[in-house]
Length: 550
Image (tube, rainbow, N blue to C red):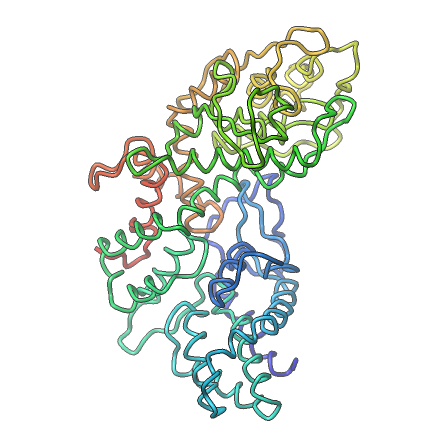
């Protein structure tokens, strides 16, 4: 069987080599130094991420979302500016993708064989399998050559039985670069049409808005020419966004941005936080995701999710496990329920217990990680990696001689420690504003009997600089900040393209997307918010391709 797939392996390497990351790509910061750009064995391309792989396999074969992930065993995705991308192909990727293709082809064999249930002729069965699954796996119609090659592969295995022949073709589809790569090269059609045809556009639109392959309606729209006009693209984008898949997927960018999947695994010093059980940590994650969902989606088209709802929303989501931990009265069950908790102290995503608990230390709060996150992910600021052999040591949170976290970290912003001061002058004053919340996100006014100072400072931004009394005041400022709006729009733009940032992206974002997010789109009547931003990107020339529909 190894000999049969050697051709597919060569094709995967050859096709990937044609799709390098865009020129002038800005190197990843400390959050994502996964790709070794100096290695000659790493090919930079756009492949399916593990999440996209899971959704695509499930949609291709009609699988349930329950049970093991199809991508189990595949290498981790590249982490770039806090988001997961598929931008590298190595020999390890190819080895693991081949193993996954073999495993999945065996698991779905009965589902694929079902299309042949009433077909007695082996040749007709092979033609039916290729006709049914190959165009959907490739996300476009087959070339005659591709169809012939797949049928030849099928015939070569028929002597070993029909089931083996079908399984082999299924494995070949799953191992093909046309399946694994986001936009593999397409041979020009006889009429000379561009590779940026309607099917490429359909695939790009679907992965941006649903994280998976096009559905049947989108395939039909591509085949009938509906995607040749911007009005047709917009109509399909609206359908996808407002459907179940789109509404479930739109918040995914922000779940990754805030790393909500890590919240369930947090642990703390049991002497200081005895109530943070594994069940409570898992419910903090579920409550955080519930807030993000409502903040991004809004309650209706007339009340969409906006930057304001993201940074000012007053609902905090508790369960029967987390409510007692925060002293919240009332009856709660296993389902997170939102209540306006401590509205004078909290507001928005940065003051959700789950986020505050994640950005904390084992023995207490953490102004450094909180400040770094805000600087990088909310303000899109550049920070250098920490220097080696840092001389400053931070005392333990249980060291009574230095009672507050702010005091323990004060050396970072002391100019007499230049190795720390050069960066921490832009980090710690942001992080200190969160000191009104402890290591699991509970509010406090004192720490170890000493008063907690929550004053902070925002620096080196275009329009958001200035002192803040606390993190709530900072969140209020973020809700109307053009710097924050630009940063959120930039994250969404790069998420749409699934690639690292390039030198020209900020100009593209500010040409249209920042304004749409904050003010809406006057040309379409779309209200301000994340849904309108997604629609603006989906119908923009820079997204649709070099031959954008008019």
